[in-house]
Length: 216
Ligand code: DX5
Ligand code: ZN
Image (cartoon, rainbow, N blue to C red; front, side, top):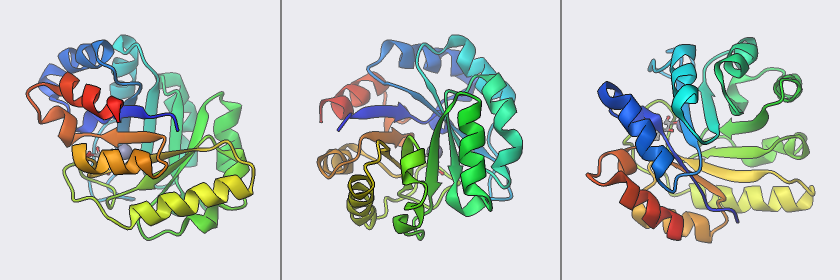
């Protein structure tokens, strides 16, 4: 278990983005999580390439990009050129998932496959050896500040079993509705990475929240 903390910039104060990037640089956070949405795969629009570029310019930690978009295979090169280090694509958005995974790897990026709350992780069995991360969505993707879905604990268990059975090195990342209470149990149950937006950025002292999460 790695216990990596990836704050989601979707909840950052965009009027003070540079300040929030510096805060995360100084904090015990491990990665910067950036949510890209296209209003097609999810019913929201967030950031484009320029946002990734700006964060990359000032961030001193890896950039973890979560593509909540249709046809993500069309945007791999631009994400790489903008500064992404990890690229997550949704299982539900990829018709040729195997091809997309290898295309991401060819660009030298680490690759994750995200699964919506309703998608059984067993569907990843034929690609689990080829990926670096399984990104378990613990809310329906599209918005920050939603309620955590408890079935995620079962999905962590299922993912762990799948990884072990297939001798995969994939790490388990969980995203959505994570707070100081459930984070403890997520790590305890086998999550390696947690993504957290509103819990971190809505506090007056985000670094303190990150420190607490990191201690679990
Ligand atoms: C949701 C995004 C998350 C979001 C998490 O679709 O993928 O990364 O920013 O925000 P919280 O932690 O507030 O649920
Ligand atoms: Zn995300």
